[in-house]
Image (cartoon, rainbow, N blue to C red):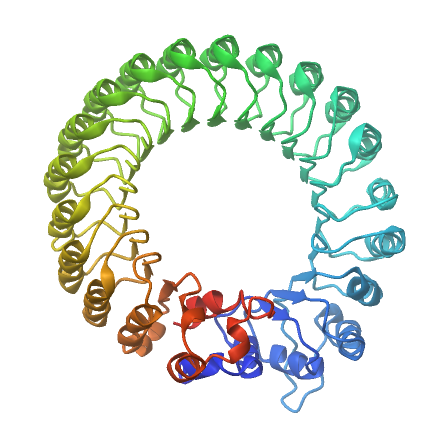
Length: 617
């Protein structure tokens, strides 16, 4: 609530909790103390936005009992809870999260008859046989829970029990089994369940040691299953043989639209099997093949499929060593394909030759909107070819060219393209050795460009002079919302120029400047600028100064804008990277109103301070 002083609120965890519980703008309540949960229920009866309850392991047995009673009596069927005001208990609460199987065991029976919760998160628990029995009972009786998260929490025979329950459950549509080491046996059991289950639409079985034999069984299940649209098989070991079994299923399956096969060692042979399937499949719109060692040959096979396929919109081939030849094959496919909108070729060593082939394709392609070529060593020559294409292309809105050694010469060519390009809104040029000369050319372009809203210049050795060039852009620019200048050797003079720009800029929302060398005077100038600036909502200034008082100066100056910011539902987010820990006790309490235990790494509150500041300021 606006009338609550956010700084003082932090000093009392219970008051802060009550404020959040009653706030009409909060959507989550985290319970981690033995507080009176009946009072929580009263607070929630007035609340219309809270949608999530998170239960930690130290809430106490009596509190659990009271909450169970509340869930059973007062929340069932949205029944009105008899309070003095006769208000109905909030019907917005839909998610409950546990960090302890003990808590879940005691609340499971209450959730069985509760009709408000549609999501149960057990990923922070250790679910053994007894707890699994309670979950199975819940799944048989509850008619509202549709989303269950069991990621990394199932041990012994618990996975088998829960998987078996899926054969009879008709409410769960989303389930997460990732990181449970299901193995071949568990994969086969899951396949049996999926053959008969008619409800699940999204399933995550990543990181489960699923091999080619288990994939064969799963493939057979997918041939007859007509509800699963999204399947995550990332980081398993299906290999080329497993890819073949999946490909066979995709030839006849009419439901799957999204597949994640990250890190499955399918190699070029597996890519060939999938490519053949994609030539006839007309439902898959997104496929993730990152880190599969498909190489040049695999890329060529997929490219052949993309010439024919007219439904895939998103393809991710990051870290596949496709080289310049693979890039050339994909480029040819792009000229013939008009459905792909997102393509990720990050870290594939395509070089300047591959960039040239892709640039030729982009001159005529009108469907690709997001294009990722990060870490491909395209150099200045490749950047020049892409720049020529961008002068003609009017569809790409997001382009990532980070870590490509394009240098000042390459960025100069790109800058010329940006002067006339009317489509790009987000561009990443981080780690490209742009230097002062390069950023000067870029600044000229940015003063003319009217579409870019976000630009990343991370780690480009800009120095004070480069920061001054960017500051001259920000002083008058009306479109840039986010700028990243972290790790650029910017000192006091650069901080001074940026601070001056912030005083007049009225569009910038986020600024990342950590890892520079602003000094205490530079930090104070930025703090003073924030008192004037009316739009900046997020600023990162980590690793700029060793004096925590200077970080607090930013907080103090900006605090004067808090009422205005809060009334407009803005948030002030400051990343201090635990700088507050360096303050003396009196300074902590006096300046921030934070209890002493906040600075204790072993305290349950030690990780909450940044989040609290983010929410309340």
